[in-house]
Amino acid sequence: MAALRAWIAGSVPGARLPTSRALVAKYGASPVTVQKALRTLVAQGLIETRPGAGTFVRAVRTARPLDYSWQTAAMRSPHSRLSALSPALRAAPQGAIALHAGYPDRELLPERLIRSALARAARSDAALIRSSVAGLPELQSWFAHELGAATPVGVTPPLPSDVIVLPGSQSGLATIFRALVTAGRPLLMESPTYWGAIQAAAQAGVEVIPIPSGPDGPDPDALARAFQETGSRVFYAQPTYANPTGAQWSDAATTQILDVVRAHGAFLVEDDWAHDFGIDTDPRPVAARDDAGHVVYVRSLTKSVSPSVRIAAVIARGPARERILADRGAESMYVSGVLQAAALDVVTQPGWQTHLRNLRPQLRARRDLLLTSLREHAPDAHIATVPAGGLNLWARLPDATNLDRLVADCEAAGVMIAAGTSWFPAEPTGPFIRLNYSGPNPGAFADGARIIGQAVTSNH
Image 1 (cartoon, rainbow, N blue to C red):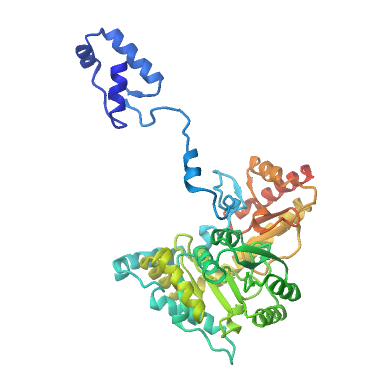
Image 2 (image 1 turned 135 degrees about the vertical axis):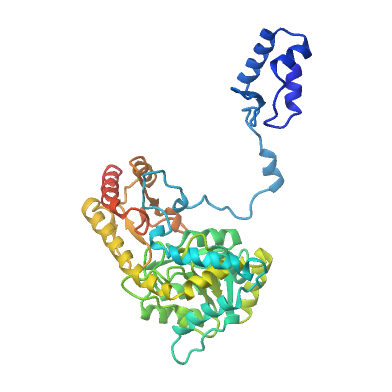
C-alpha cells in the first residue's frame, strides 16, 4: 500500500494502475494481499475500479478541507464590499414557477431574426476583424438615429460619433461611474433602483446617495437639495419603466428634473433599459430634450433582442464621451464584432418592428393576468402602481412580513420570487417583492399567486 500510494501521488488523475497479476509479480505478494490493498485504497478515495476496464487513479484524491486563508492576507481588505448576486439571477429548479428573473421568456424574443442574424454575422467579415473601440459605424448610426428621431425641433440630435457601443449596459454603468463620478465621490441614485447599478457603483468605489422616487419620478426639490448638500454632479435614474417599480416620469417631472440637473452643472445618467417594452405608453427618452451634454444616455438591446447578444450603447457628448471611451478601451478594448453585426442585423430587419408591435399585447396580457391573480389570491401584496411598460410588478407586503422566510417558503412550494431588498441602495423602506410577468409559463400565474398569498398570510 505504501508503494502504491507513492505511485498514485506521482500519477495524473485517470491513470490506470497495473493489473493485479502485475502487482503480484512485482511485489511478490499473494493475490489476496493485493486485492486487500486495492480495496483499502478504494475506501480511502485514492483509486476507483471500473468493471471490465481496470483500476484508475481518482480525479478527486482526498476529501480534506482546503485552506485559502492566505488569499485574504495577500489581497487585503477590498476598497468596496460587493453584495451577493441579486436573487433575480438564481437558477430556477425544473418545474418551478419562476417569477423572480429579470429576463423575458424566449417566446417573447425574435428567435427567427436572431438565428438568421447570427448565421449571417458568422459568414461576414465581422467574424474575422477587430472592431473599433467605439463600435461598428453602422451600429453607432442606428443608435444615434433612433434617439434623433425622438428629438424635438430646436434640439440638435446626436451624431453617430457620440455613440459608444457596449458589451451590455451593466459594464457601461461601471464605466460611466468611474469616468464621471470617480472613486470616493458622491453619486445620487433613485431609490429603489436597478440592483445592477448599485453593484456597479460599489465596484467603482463611489458613495451612493439615495433619492426617494415615486410613480412620477423623484421630487425635484429633494434632488436639488441633494445636489446642494453633497456636491455631487451625477444622478443615475431610470425615467422609463423603472426596474423594479415600473414607474415612468411625467413630462412635467422630466422638465423640472432636467432644469435641476442643468442648474447644478450636473449629469443625468439615463438608463433606458426597457425602451422596447412599452405597453400602455411609449418611451420618452429624457436625452432627446438635451443637446448640451447633461444627459448621458444608456440604451440596451440585451433583454429585447436576446440575453446572448449583449449589446448596448452610451450616447454622450463633449469631454464626458472621451473619458467614457478611454475607460472602455482600458476595460475591454472593443466589443465582439460578430455580436454587433448580429444586433444591427436584427434591429434593421422589417420583422423587428413587427415583433415589437406583437410584443406589446403579449406583455399586456401577462401583466394583467399576474395582476388579477395577485388581487384574487394575494390581496396583502399591494401593487401601488400598475406599470405602463417594462417587465415587473412591485408589491408592498405587510410591515411585519419576514421576507427571508417568505422567499424560502415560496421556493419550497415551487415558486421563485425576489425579495425587494436588493433594489434599495440603503435600508429598505418596507418589505417588497419584485415579480416578473415576462417569464415562462404564464398559465401558472394563478397557482403562483395562490402560493404567495398563503405564504404572506403565514409570515406576518
